Length: 137
Image (spheres, rainbow, N blue to C red):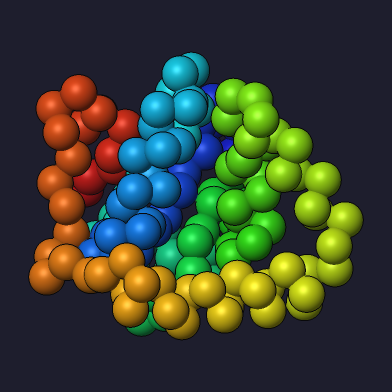
């Protein structure tokens, strides 16, 4: 992906049930196909994390690569929301909340996501209808 790519990449925890549900929700609300996806645990996910100076062993964050820049945690989520159909772009106003406050809430939720929503033994294989939106090596 180049800096002037017409797409953004979302890296997500591929074994987290909540994260997989969130990816499905993004796909349903992103009719233009702006977002592409890769699991943090995948080879392409690890490669992109290293390329952008992130630790591939840290699987507790959402990552958005957009316009050659990398965004994580709450900033990634809010930047994703602004590209979806209404009412999701309204959440982007929360960007005015200082990042330490937003990320405190994000981290609090991230520590509990497996307990609340469960975890799979391996990454989910996307359906044929959306497989082209997922990056592979």
